[in-house]
Structure formats: C-alpha cells, structure tokens
Length: 330
Image (cartoon, rainbow, N blue to C red; front, side, top):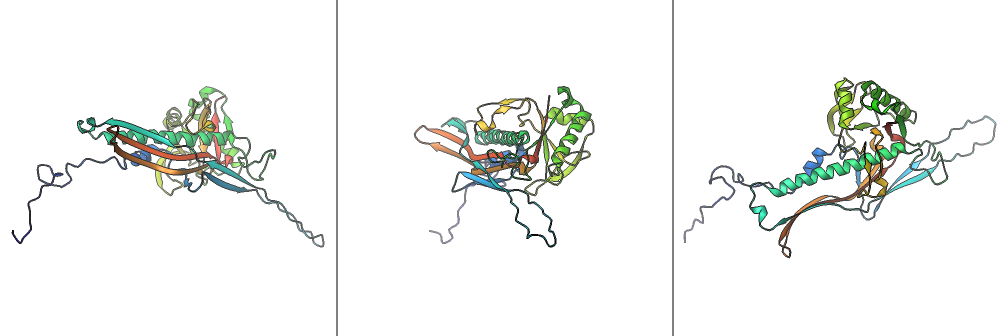
C-alpha cells in the first residue's frame, strides 16, 4: 500500500471533467419562491408585517388627542381632562398554500428544472394574492366613515382619529381624462390633509390599474423619482408631478371587480367595481404573520410522488382609516 494516499477523483459537476466543479449543477427549488415574491409584489416591502407568535392575535392601541385649558390667575385649581384609549385587533387564522404533485419518474425526464419553474409560479401567485389583500384593506379603510378604533355607540371617538377619505368623479369616463383624474387626486389629498395626514411625509402611495397609470404618464402628469419604503429601501418609480407621491401600476388591485369567497374571510369580500384609485400609507394597515413564507419539496414513499409546496399564514386589516383615501366612479 502506498504511503501517499492520493487518488484521481471524478467531479460529477464538471462539464467533461473541465472547468468549474459546479458547471452541471441544477438550481434547487429553495429560495425561488421568495425571490419571485419580492420581485413581483408591489406592496410586500411597503407594508410592515409583524410576527404573531404565541398567540393568534395582533393588537394596536390608540390614544385620543389631549384637550387644552386656560389657567386663570386666582381661579380654582385646574381639573384634569380625559384622553380616550381604544384598541384594534387582527386575528391570524388561515394558512395559504400552493402545492403541486409530480409523478415519481417524470421530473427526471424533462430537460428543465420543473421545481424551479413551479416555484416561480408559486411566488407570482402568492405575490398577487398578498398585494390584493393589502389593497382591499386599504380600500376598506378609505371607505370607512369612522375610525376603526371607535367603540360601539361612540361616534367621533377616540378624539383626533377619523374615517377615510372619498373623492367621487363627476363622470365614469373622467377616470381616463388625465386632467380630471389629476384634479381628483388633488381634491382627495385636501380631504386627507384636513385630517392631519401629509401624503408626502406619511409615505402615501397611490395604487391604480394600468389604464389610469398610462393615462397620467402619457400626459406628463408623472415624473421619474425616488422614494423610500417603510423598510428604508430606496425605490425608483413614477411620482405625481406636483405632489411627489409614488403612483404604482398594478393588476393586483381589485379595482373594477367584485371579490367573493376570499380565502382570508368575508372581511375581504366586496364590490370594488367603482374604485378608480386607492391612496394609502403603511399606517393605514395592520399586518401580521405567524408562518412566514415557507417552501419545501419532498418525496412521499407511500404515494411514490414528489410534492412541491409553498405556504404562509398571515392576516391584514385596516388600522388608521384616515391614512387612506379612494377615488370612485359615480
């Protein structure tokens, strides 16, 4: 036996035993869904999603505004004033799943990585679903006439908290008239600002369908610009010319449709056929997740099949309604 234990080894990942040792490696499924979701979702990075662990509920508390009073010299000692307190709760109780089942043999007989392709489709579908759910709740916030923190039989409370803002076009066709649509945005922002919401500093974005987006773009109502997401990411996009507010074109908006039997529950169902655009800040929404996006590919010995999965459990509801506004057709 030679003292020098050296051997000639075979590198199965090399192309004809030459070059990089991973030249023939095939990209695995893991990570494909996450990267596709990040690229295809317009709002996943915009809306903070907090972890919900050890419970099924996420709670926000609200405090009403304070009251001032005047001190009178020589008068009685000033009494205290009252601040209203309230809470808003989100329950996470649903798992959303994408699954494909592949026969034992066929994945090895195709010339492409089926798992990767399936993962990309899972990512796109989940991105569309999440974006739609966020926009639905933003629309719900905008349509709310009272604060979501209002207790039963307590209109106008807590003080300093308000409902959403609505701006209705004079005619349905005005949605594709750039001047009238642009004016509707201005009128909506006036209503939001009367509730102490600053569309520029409160990170408001506007979600529209492509038809409205290109109506504004073609008529020079949008300009190139950069805005910062709630996560601190710098994103280059299109901004309203005079207001500096991002406008996002997305097919994931429910505008112009009716939603029924939504997977996340009846709170997401509704008639959104009159919605033209929705403006909202991250503060308009409260979102949480118990199971972050999780992917898996595994082989079941009993059924002799491959399973390709992607699942997550999250919820979203509207939080501060005054941070949302909607433009509607008559």
